Length: 90
Image 1 (cartoon, rainbow, N blue to C red):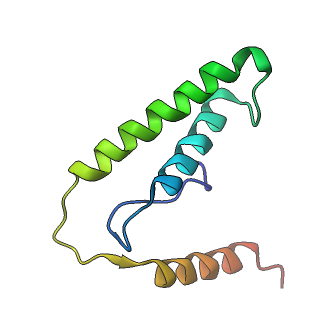
Image 2: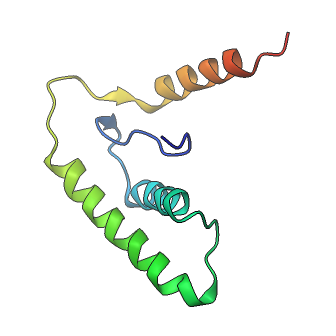
C-alpha cells in the first residue's frame, strides 16, 4: 500500500473531507502512475478522485467498532518512531 495513504477510521477528532480527498488523490496518483495528469486526462483524473472520495466517505460512515477512538497525536508519534527506526543510519 502507498505509504502516503493514512488510515482514516476511528480517530478523534473524526476524519475531515480534506483528509479523505487527499487519500483519494494519492490513490489515483498511484493507480494511474501520474502525479499530475496531462490536460487531456485531467477530467478523468479529477472525476476518479471525486468518486473515490465519495465512496471512501460512504465506507467510513458505515464502519463500526467497539474500540475507543485513536488519538491523532499519539498515532503520529508512533509513525515518527517507526520512521526513525526504518531510516536510522547509525
